[in-house]
Amino acid sequence: MTTRPVLYSWRAHPGAPAPGLPWQPLSDDLYWESSKRAPDRRLLFAPAPDWADDLQRVARAVFAADRCTSRNATFDRWTRHIRLSVPVTAPGAWARALPHLTKLLTTVTGDRWEVEFRPFDADRTRSGPLTFDTEEYAREVSLFSGGLDSLGWAAQRATTISSGALLLVTFQERNFEALQDSVYEAVLGQSKRPLRRLEQSQTVRKPKGATFELERSTRSRGLLYATAAVHAAAAERVPVVHIPENGQLALNPPLSAARAGSCSTRSVHPWTLYHLNRVVAEITDTPDVALRVVNPFASLTKGGVCAMARDAGLPQEVLEATLSCGTPPARQGNQARLAHCGLCFPCLIRRSGLLFAYGEDRTPYASDPWDPHLDKKRTRRWRALQHWLDTPCTVLDLLADTPLPSDAQPAELLAVVERGREELRVLVESAARWRRAA
Image 1: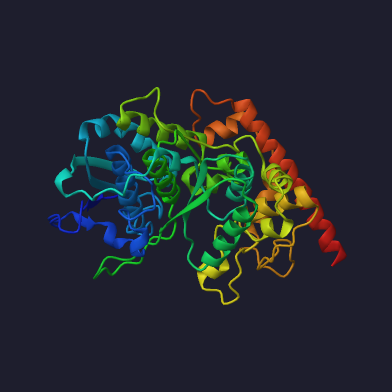
Image 2 (image 1 turned 60 degrees about the vertical axis):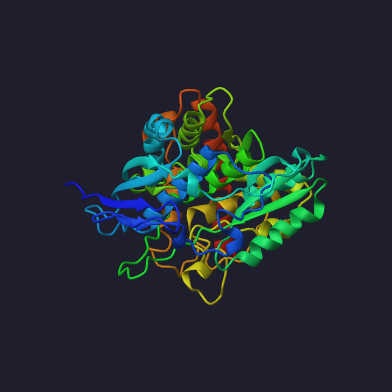
């Protein structure tokens, strides 16, 4: 059984005509963001090259299409067929990049994508920001979500004495802006170098007159983040973008067959980064010197990241103030406005990492998965985790779920997963003791 494609066309600028049926229009107007965070008003010290503008435009179009297409309407309630038309300045270069872009989108969303490119009207493109002296440019660019991993990397780099600025790219999380601000202030307070922060929006609203509800899975969100950082780095001539994610969660091996493939987040998986870097290489037409996106924590577990952040001088309470949850209660309308459900896999990984680094975790969670009063539905991930820890994990398990690039070292990646499993086993054993003592 196949799913009929949903057709979207990205409007290059507010005055562009709407596409004719059956194409549905998408544009920057769908993003709920203040004028200071609009794509043409970001606080960069130089204009980005055309290819970086194109990459950002493609990612924003993908994310808007992702949010506007419900998975519930498909035969398996997951796999969609999306056809997308986006204007770019170099359609020929994007045609060469298309195979990598298609694999990238399929990996992160699990959908069937058909992307086509049409010429962008350069005469109507936005004007770039003022150009400053190159000495003012950033020397490093990294994503900064307000999560534990990005905090650890930012703290490490901020305490490295340098005259060059560290630019942190943040996508604001609704209901958690104050939390993200406080975590950033903690890094700023101990920084030994200039620190800048670029705030972006990830909130898409329904098109006017739409009767559907926005899709909630947002699997392409990581691509939106990464391309914004690439755009900033390209503008200020930074050759490497850092996306810090512990290797354990970057690989994110499924706890069960039901969570294989894109059902588990793949935004920083080695296969994802490989194809993103290949897209960048093709559209810049300089594959040997193209800007690269790397994960500096690929060899670390969550516990390793927590220990590194601790050793960088961050107080335990700052690490515990970060946001790690995949489904924060406050985002779901919970009046307690807690940041962590305590039950999802990212929360379980977080618990094990903090326990490894500090011997305790004082984060206020909405629930504990070992609570005997919770029903089976709410403890399903905890039970799946225990079953997974009792089952051998091999290189074949990593390869069977999502491919690895040819230069990957499977044995080293498996070693990271195994160290993470040991940290999780300690959490399970500690939970048994806590439950007996209760």
